[in-house]
Amino acid sequence: MDSLLVNLRKYRPRDNTDPLENFVTEAFAWLLRSSEEVRKVIFTRINQALQLPCELPQDECVVSSQENFNGKFPDLVVNWPGCTWVFEHKVWSHLHSNQLKSYRDYIESHSDDYRLILITAKTYQHAQNPDAALCWQDIYHCLHKLEQNNNDEQLSWALNDFLTLLKTEGLGPSTPINRFAMSHYLEAIKFDSQVDSVFKQAEQLQWPLLDLDIKPLFKRQKTESRVGLEFSPEFGEYGRCWLPSIFCGVLLDGGDHGVTEFIKDELNLCFVFDFNKLGQTYISGSDTYQDFKSDLSELVKEKFCQWQFIDTALEPKAKYNRWHPIFLLTPMLPIFKDMHTHQEQVDTVHTLFSEIQTQLLSLSSFRNLLTELALLKEKI
Image 1 (tube, rainbow, N blue to C red):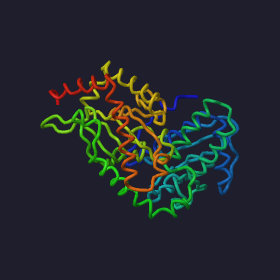
Image 2: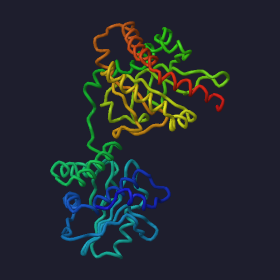
Image 3: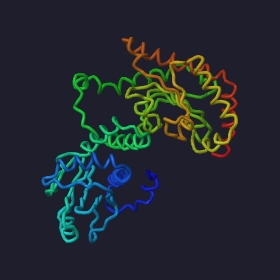
Image 4: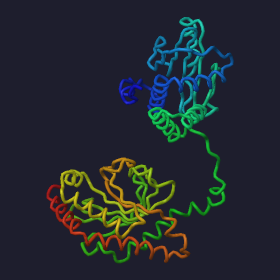
C-alpha cells in the first residue's frame, strides 16, 4: 500500500477550488488505488445507483485525480477497458453552470462508454443529470461495513482515518435533532451566563497563587474555547504575560488545545499552563521545565487521581499545542451534579482549584521555573 502522505504531497491544487474537496478527493483516490476490496464495494454501490449499470472491471483499473478535460478538471477519473467513470465531488458548494455538460462533451469524444458520477454532501446538491448521484454518507456506509469485516490491519487503519475525516467534516451519517436537546434548549442557552457568573464571583476570592502576586482575571476566550480565571504574572509596563499563565476554568471544546480525544463529548474542568512565544522558546531547552512536568505528573497521580495529566508533546492521542503544552482535565458533571445553589458551585470551584494551586506551590521545581521565567522580562 503506497503512502497516503506521499500521494497528498504530489497533489497540485487548482485555483478556485475548495481545499477540503481536494483533500477528500485525494484521500478517496488513494483508497481506491490501494485496495481491491475498497474498489469492489465502492464500484458495486455506484453501479447500483447508475441508471444504466455497466460491467465492472475484473482486473486493475487506472484511478486518476489529475485529468485535464480541455481546460476542465473533473475530480476523479477511473478507467478500465470498456468504460470510463468521471467523478465530480462536492462538499458544501454547488456545481458550476454546465459543469457536468462540459465533462460529458469531452468524454463523449474520448471514450466509447462512460458514466458521470456526482458525489455531494447532501441530496439537495444533486443537479445537472449525472448518471449516478450519491452522498458522501453513502460512501461512508460502504467503507464502514468493510472496516467491520476486514482483517487487514493496514487497510483498517486507512479506512478508519478516512471515515474519521468524513465524520469530522460532517460528511458521515446525518444525525437527527436530539430530543433531549429540544427539551432542555431554553435552559441550555442560559449556561454561558451562569458559568460566567460562577467564575466572576470566584475571581473575588482569596487564591493561593496570590501569595506570589499572580492574580486572577476572568476570561471567556473564544479561540481557546474556554471560560474561567486566568492567573498570570505581571511584568511592569508589559502587564500580564503567559510566563506562564495558569488557567482554571471550563474547557468547552478540545479542538484548539489538541485534546478532542480526551473530552468524550462532555464539558471538562481544566487547569492549563499557557506560555507565550518567549516562554515556549525557553522551556524547549529547560531542564527545570522537564523536572516540573515530571513532578506535576506524580503529584496528580498521588493527590488528584480524578484528573488527567496531559502533556500534549508526548501524549499520542493529543495534538501538540505549544501555547498550552500541559494541563489537567476532569469531567465537570460528576462534580456539579449534587449542587443546587449558585454559592455551592462557586465554593466548589474555589476549593477544587485552590487545592491544586496549594500543592503546585509546594513543588520546588515549579517555583524554580517561575524564577527562571521571570528573568526573561528583560527580553520582552
